[in-house]
Image (cartoon, rainbow, N blue to C red; front, side):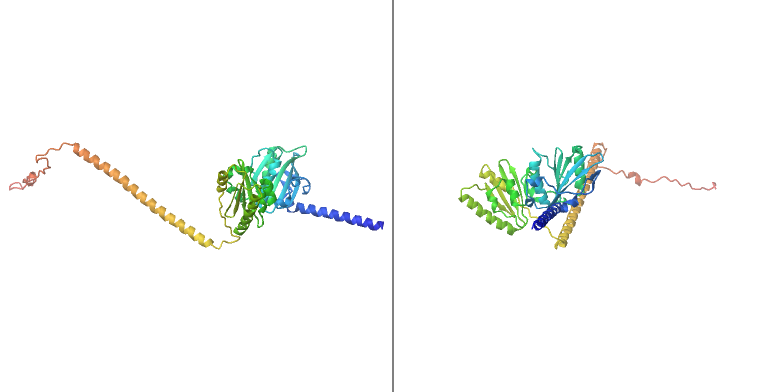
Length: 390
């Protein structure tokens, strides 16, 4: 009996150990492949490890479509040590969404978000740098007694970012559809799930009707006292279904006397919310600043490529011909103008010079041709040989 209990205990322990090993391997996953053995002058100190503590103590991985995450320490020849934490997500938007949430509680104050300096977008603080590139979110921190200085961290982060793939498209397109996005993107929040959006927007009851099914994405930012939320759906059908549910939800909240959005409207495939606006006019103005721009992308070869190329070629050649005709006409007009100006000036100059000369005339002011001398006999210049002179 005791042996049976002992074997059961051993089996349970082995099962638990295998579970933790499997969970660790799953959490490391593809993220470990993004942590090379060497980065510049820094060499890895041991294999990639799962991150036991960190940002996912406060955030849920499923809210940001996290696939795997891992960390690895690196040391330089002068014993400066850095720790790299990589989160591999399902999309560029998910990685950027994680970035917008992390900087809110990791980098205290008003961090300076930079575009294109390190990766796609980055932020730095004392002893740490976070950035995103492609589907990866990365944090680089100083570690150990010989902690790397800020410049060393920056150089290391740039080298590490250059080794990551993706990031060619920059920020998600939806960010640029925020009104005055260049001034607001630094503190805007991005979301690829409803829990992440609710946390960023302040848990709004009207947003409970939104479904992120089909790959919806959202962005939210403050404009003074008001908060703007834009949700983009992947198809018109998803947009129409969510619009109907949102309308019903707002009606229910209004009937129950609960808070409702200051303004709501559907713009193309967007659902636009304005919360906490000071008045209806300000809410409508803010909502009207959102424009829907359709972006059609073909998965593979565009079937209209030849037609588009033909139109582009025709348009280009037409513009070339029109430009040539206009240039030629202008050149002719210029030559005629310059030639006429010079010729006119020469004509006027010669007429003025002739007018200034005094001409004598005995024909009443007319010119007289003196041709009498032409009719006079010419003197004989021929010498005749006379008699006796031979």
